[in-house]
Length: 293
Image (cartoon, rainbow, N blue to C red):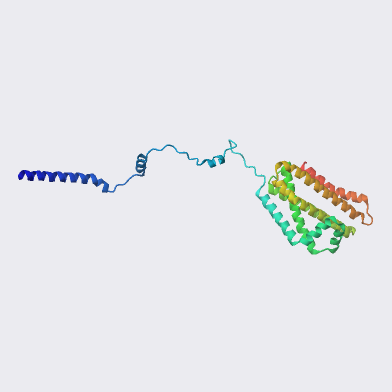
């Protein structure tokens, strides 16, 4: 009995020792311990089976659309059409559309007066205040369109403008010079008409100058759009055709001016030739010389 007791006691001691060893082995799993993220990632990577390299290019549908470099080095940005140019062109188109909508009847009268001398005489005889206001608005739009055309011509023909190299400043200079030249010319004609008592023929002549300015503005509205957005190979031809059309309009105005002055009593062909050389041809030659064409 005593041996059995000892044997059973030994078994109990062995069982207790096994329980202690199992509890010691299981204890770390229940104890909180700080872990490192790198160790966790290394453990995950070690547990993850190695997979062969996979292509990340995606499906073959987009392989033909990959951007490929054309130049090994950086290229300067050449922006021919500036933001101010686009805004100015859109504003001028908007102003002309507004004028065409609100002054539709006056616009038709002015357009018909350019080709009909009788309608021109009737408009000058009426002296409508509304017509004068509309003429002023249309003249300003035409001056700006002329300035925009000269700006594009100066860029394409590489005019040497000295210190005026900025696009906006060059456009403003051309517009101000054109508006000032026509304004000074009309003021001088008004002064001479009061001095020599020739108000009626001078008023008719000034109105013909305005009609020519209006038609040039109408012509240059699509020309400016074509010069800005047409291919480079066509710009030279656009400049030539537009310059030829402007020259034809100028000759047409001279013919009408001669018709006006020949109807004045005491007309002198010498004085007419002197006037045309001083106020019509000489300014064009000065502009030609300044541009260096």
